[in-house]
Amino acid sequence: MLKRLALILLLATMAAPAAAQEKLKVVATFSILADFVRNVGGDRVAVDALVGPNGDAHVYQPSPGDAKTLADAKLVFANGLGFEGWINRLVKASGTKAPSIVAAKGVKPRKAEDDHGHGEADPHAWQSVANARIYVANIRDALSLADPAGKDSYAANAAAYLGRLDALETDVKAAIEKIPPDRRRIITTHDAFGYFAAAYGVAFIAPQGVSTEAEVSAKDVAKIITQIRKQKIPAVFLENVTDERLLKRIGAESGARIGGTLYSDALTDEKGTAPTYLDMMRHNVKQLAAALAGV
Ligand SMILES: [Zn+2]
Image (tube, rainbow, N blue to C red; front, side, top):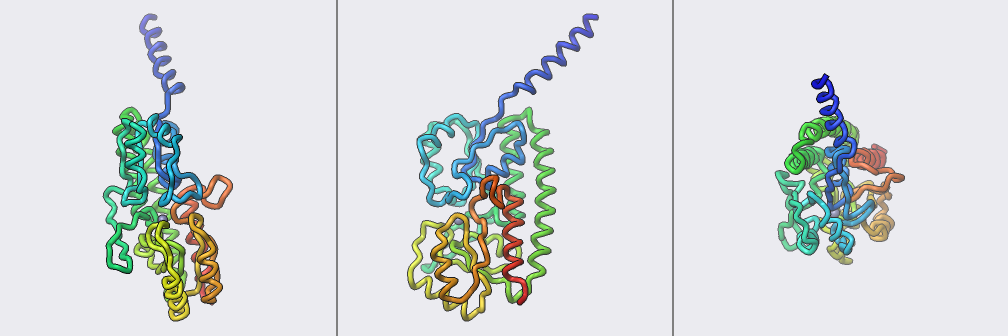
């Protein structure tokens, strides 16, 4: 009898904390990274994104509210590779004790050369699904370290999500394969698709560098227009995080058609077409395939 009572009490205490369990507060610097963390963290984790949907992390100006969010967090995830130039100062100013995790750690960085031959790391590593797998593994390991009781849950969530990434990668490659090789060339505003280009064999040409901070000169624009005409580049694409006027002008002057909008550095909100990373990649590939398909 006593044994049974003890068992009931034990079961009750086991069940209670799980229901009332406080979620692990985690901050991710931007929407794409927040989506990865949500997929791995599941219901044990509450994720705040500093730069929200359609936001540009390159030129983000943190608010006092962001410092407060960081101060309350148990873990901070940043992309790294120079993407968030403002993060170290913000972490310091917030006084947070939370460890900062570089999600792109272990990615082989792509170097983007500017006109003066300076090598600058390209931060947009998530644009290749192979790199997204590295992000997911880093997130799983960091969450498990911060919340050891959730280790099995994080491992299971990560494994399930990695399976979805595998399926995504297969679909991306199959869609690009269908585009005639001589038409796999497009223009975007800023140089955000270098990893995508290297992984899947589509050439992206951008008047702006790897950061949206860079100024675009009239000379750069003229150069691109000449290139579009010479190489018969079929389409130019707008991006959700950049000013669309520049690309519309280039499209009009060169005769290349506007292929649509690509999502490079941020997801859309729930109502948009790319509220998750998987949606974003599928949307981008669909747009490319439609614009570049044979004439
Ligand atoms: Zn960017």
